[in-house]
Amino acid sequence: MVRIATVQDAEQLEILNNEFNGEGETALDNIRSSLANNKQEVIVVDEQNGELTGFVCVQLKKSFCYDDYMPEITEVYVKLRYRRNGIARAMITYAEEYCKSHYPLHKFELLTGDENDGAQSVYGKLGYSEDGELHLAKRFARK
Image 1 (cartoon, helix red, strand yellow):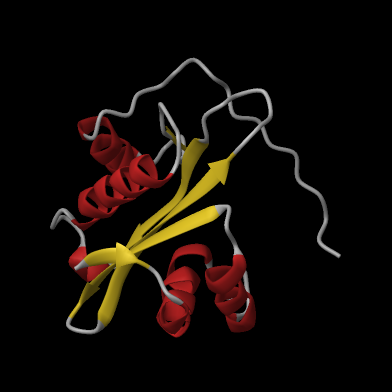
Image 2: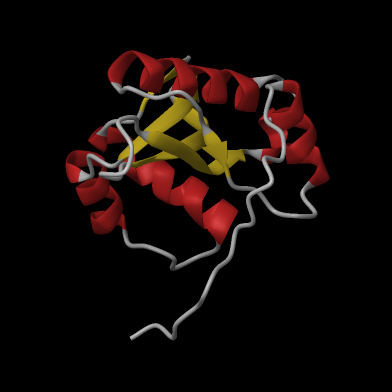
């Protein structure tokens, strides 16, 4: 079942995030706090028999320059044993529909790895394509 994540999902989301992004990227308390308080993010999960199988994170970018929100899918993860079953597609579609029904918007953006061909194939089938924008990043040392 695909749905919006709740605070009760924090422990399982910590496990999934550790699998996806590596151990120690964030603490369980921070996950709980984000689920309870972060109004700039929508987190969609897939649950099967009480187990979370994956998640999608959508950042709700908003600027005074535009009337609409510019949601960006920043994280998509499905546990290895559940892949190739349409879960990522279902979660992304759910996230799109949820955001379209709750926020004024006219497009979705998506961030993925340059060499992540498998994910890019899924995203292409969902209608995502390169838009001519170049994503740049600048890293700072952690304190």
